Image 1 (cartoon, one colour):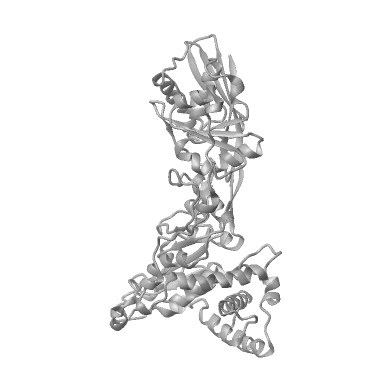
Image 2 (cartoon, helix red, strand yellow):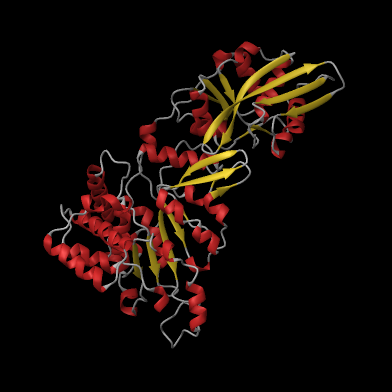
Length: 508
């Protein structure tokens, strides 16, 4: 007997429809699976056989062949366990074949027949919709994220026996519905700027960076609060939109990072990989690539502490994504594009020991400092719009109570107003933030009056600015003006923007 059911394979950020075919015929007893399978998919054979046995379904002593088509699409993961088991049961006439029409199946089987959650259900739901299927059956732990797609019916089950019962009696299948409006409640469980004492310059730089989605570098000795400031930044970013939440949730779903039973992620991401992270872990990798840290940080913050301690290859892997806001990974089976719309926040010490130029504490030689800072190429540093030195706090400020510090909620209101001004300004364009204004249109959005133009001419000549540095100052000044609600960029905005220019690291 022959049967077929539908499932899907994850290809980058998308799902690809897969037909799982089963044939049970006379011959030497065997259970063969074919169709460009990864190791974990091949291992589905003993899992499915054992799960069927323990669920009360004895396989006949016949030749069983499973084909996952199309055969040229690589299949990864454990999500094919359930469709393989159902295809076999349909080929044995235990499940009516007509009840499988228009249905997509995905799920991992335990040896006792229980269903376990799998990765990528949001992408699978989108694939089912695009392929003209009307229904989806997944483990209970995945049903909420699948039901975010309200164009198809999504049902859940906890055990293979429950699946068989639902497939025999379709009227018993009840679709789960998710109220997207209730999911959009803003949540922030991270740190708050009111907990930071002093550091007014760094706090101001963080606010400007958040308002214009500018990349930020925090420079200073150990223990002055660089990491603390970075961890507070997600709390001053605007509330997520539904589109942003869906993209963040989809990325986490594909990586298997969605909390069980969660429909949508509503907090801005904050990713802080260790400085030993590889370039592949940052950009995404694998034989069939999965999103990396750059994609997981989309619409949030990517925090890179100890920046010069990272490998040169990892640092240079940041350059193109910072410019294009996407990552393209090419492999034998094709090219895959992942989003990389993150805000980079980096922290570093001025030297290996961290205390330069204080020669009472620093014992680093000039060659050691040059080697330490030499990993940071000028093209990479040019992509960081705002740089600020975080100073050591005096004892008096450490002892002050927190009553004078602004809370993140107050700062976020100003940031949201600045973002709204940018949204209106850039309506109809393919960019959203001041940091993304292309160089060819910089004067269109950051026009200067005669006094401001003369001021910038003198600054340009005195500081020997490059064209990129000049454009960086204009972008940051435009954001400072937006925070104040100013229509035009004024001289005071330009002065402050110049202060946040890239530090001359090599001369420290």
